[in-house]
Image (cartoon, rainbow, N blue to C red):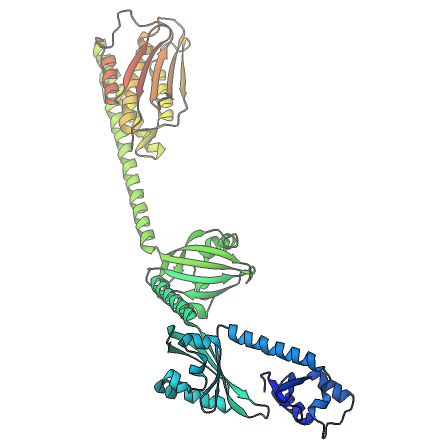
Length: 544
């Protein structure tokens, strides 16, 4: 037998029978008794010593081979028995011994506590009396009969106990073998697994709920283990894989190269493979790539990957959530195509507006050249200049490529240079200085009024700011003040404004036009008299 037994024999038992029983049962020691008292212990060491000393065993009683002193033997045997009793009583498992007539011969404290019974209320009574005839016949008796035949039985079942109610227990029946090798009963061990069972059921329910959620989130969710050599093993694919990728979880797990082989070669090389570094670094990453669906179509996939190092398994556990973004990509492409088309149309519109304005300017200029009246001719030339500044704004939009904003630094420098070249008649005496490094982008609604204002102030400065043969400078600045307002300033050295100059009462068409344009900008106009004379227009950028 494989189970170690403690054998008790009378002192006059033949030694050969004791040694044979020890060999058959695997017992490591035998208690030798006389008149119901322990007189010695015969151990495996005594067996070895007997054989080594060539002691004949025929006709020798076991008591003759025991060499331990009685007091020591009694003390040790009692110690062993008390220790065994304490162990059996302290174990949380219910332990009982029944004979071949299904009568309880022994039960421990746990067994008693579950049924709220005293020792004498169970020992000496039948199993059917304690557990009920139906349970005994259906569950207990068939298994005990197999145990009495020498089989160790294990099973799990639910029983009702008087003290603790319904409990789920693991039951083991082991044959109880006597010294002569006869099975006289069964040792019953019952272990309460109720809490473990409840935990397992709760875990299974949680896993089932989580799996149901994962299978219905509209995404393909996968989990795999990634190794340092860039090999991997799949552990899980959600049912959503078939809807997203076209392949069932079983197909993907059966061929681990299937998923990788369906990725567009360009995306595999430039997107997917380089992302291994992020996985090894445990960085969450999101990548987009093209995947050939099982039906042959290309799908755009957005995959978010999260990795965690598993030191025990020497790998990285990776979770991947894949979403089909084909519709979004197609919509983005349609929007981009529409934007490209609109940009072409807007460019053409601004180009044609600029051309039409230049035609109008040219017609006015031709008309001015044919008029003898100097005032009329001057008025037409001023109109040409204003139209040219507007045309330049549209040309700037066309060349800048942004059809809602103008780089005002570039526009201002070009316009100022054009105006200075057109109206400066004292080339060696008067110089232009432009200071604009703001990188401000203005809308067309603000850029055109600013261009017209610049046109009026520069032409006025060139015409009225300097006496004949007088040297000096015209300067144009564009800046941002501490309040984040924009400041456009045009100034000149040389002649200052007349003492009686008043913005509100000025009759000059140019000054009145400037005032109107400043109102259009929702700004304010400030004038600094003296040398230099400076006109400042302060306004806020358009809020979008």
